[in-house]
Image (cartoon, rainbow, N blue to C red; front, side, top):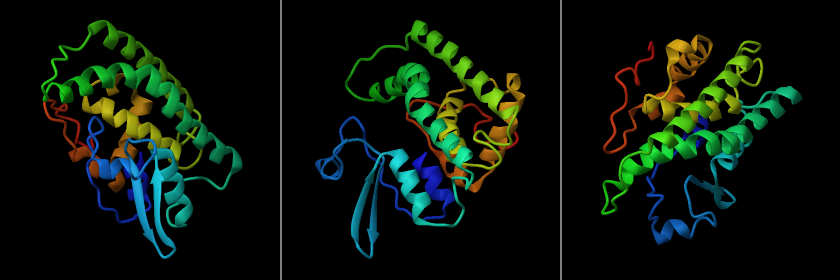
Amino acid sequence: MARIALAEKKLKVKEIIIDPWSPEPEFLNLTAEGAPPVLVDLTQHGTLTISGARSITEYANDGSKRNPLLSEDPFERAEARRLCAWFDTRFTEEVDSYILAEKIERAVLSQTQFDVGAADPDVLREGRANLDDHLTYLTTLLEKRDWLAGRRYSLGDIAAAAHLSCLDFLGEISWRDRPILKDWYQKIKSRPALRGLLGDRVAGLRPPRYYTDLDF
């Protein structure tokens, strides 16, 4: 989410990969949370450190008037922030903690000395059922709106795209069964800000053939 928002604002950043399982002491000194993402901004007033994706996106949006990521309309602005919170909490707890934990964390940890075993099919089944409910909810929003929060592209869409792109990497979304959601994701996937993420890879995992295709 932070990477997409920074790219949308056309802010130049140097990306440094942090291992969330064993971060370096230098990184831990930057943030009380002890986890990425963290933005270090060298400003004319000194060095500022912003921790967490939500904080980084809000900071980037407030710091530059170019390509605003929140509407001037009070309702749409509140709705975008509500959707960000939805993905931070409910989606993370009901979907990511099942599917991403089982498939990505196991794949990463299997590259180490830990014997984590195969993904639990019961956990994946529950996560997929929850995912289906969330995708249905997003579809109902898009049936009435141009974008998730209203008439314009916003941080709400960026939050959704950040999570769904991870699940799409794992082949967990049947876009054929979700034409309205697919049209929305195609528009976002075609934006230059998202293209940089499509080249990301995880050791031990291979995305579907269509993952980088803009006309999937």
